[in-house]
Structures are given as structure tokens and as C-alpha cells.
Image 1 (cartoon, rainbow, N blue to C red):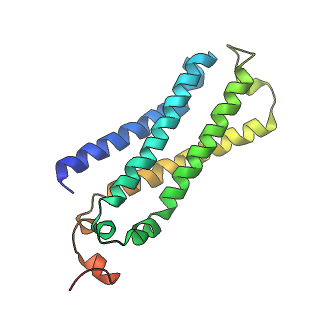
Image 2 (cartoon, rainbow, N blue to C red):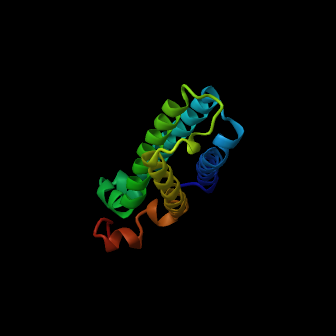
Length: 163
């Protein structure tokens, strides 16, 4: 991968991560109205889905994938893919639950109504978000390693490269 294209893709990925972080941190404080939150939540979920697509496209751009050994890349980064998909699902669930609770009580904070399951999902989503940020960022940086983009020692160790 060219350094300029890697920088562009990495910048896009980091911007999407920052948007997700800021949405998680400030959406309830600055936008208590459900219609504004609906738009922000939809943008957040679309950004998460887009991040999953971008990381998958990066996998498909590697030498191992082009040689027909995508299984190795998926195996190596399976934790990132699973955490991203899980985080997307939990986030969508939390967003739907938040907006359904707020639908009739516009302008009020959801957290004062005493829903135990909602609190649990909220905490799970926030904990999972930190794990997701770590794994996604780590994978995005590691995919810039040149060993993935040509016939390297790494591939020969896995028995894939030509000698």
C-alpha cells in the first residue's frame, strides 16, 4: 500500500473513531431532543458500518488476500472483526431503546427513569466502546505494515509465499 493512500485511509478511520467517541460522550448532554439524537445515532451507526467496510476492504487489499488466502487475515484479525460487529449491534440496540424511551418524554434524561436493563445495556455499550476503540485503532495501524502487501517472510512462515 502506498504511504499516501495509507495516511488517507488511516485519517478517515481515526476521524470516524473520533466521531463515534464524541457522539457517545456528548449526544445526551447537548441534544436532549429525540429528533436530533435520532439523526446523530443514525450517523453513528452508519459510521460504524462504514468502518467495518473499510477494514474489510483493507483486508482484501493485502497480498495474502490477492493470493487467495484471506482466511489467514481474517484469522489474525478475528477479534477486531467480532468486536466491531458486536459493538455495532449493541450500539444499535442502545440507540433504539434510548429513542423509544424518549419518544413520549422529549427533553428529559432517560437515566432518571429507573430501567435496570437499560442501565446494563448502557454500561455494556460504553465498556465495549473502549475495547472497540483499542482493537480497531490497533488493527488500522498494523494494516499499514508493508509485510502484508508483498511476498514477505511473514507469508513464507505461513507457507503461502513463493520461494
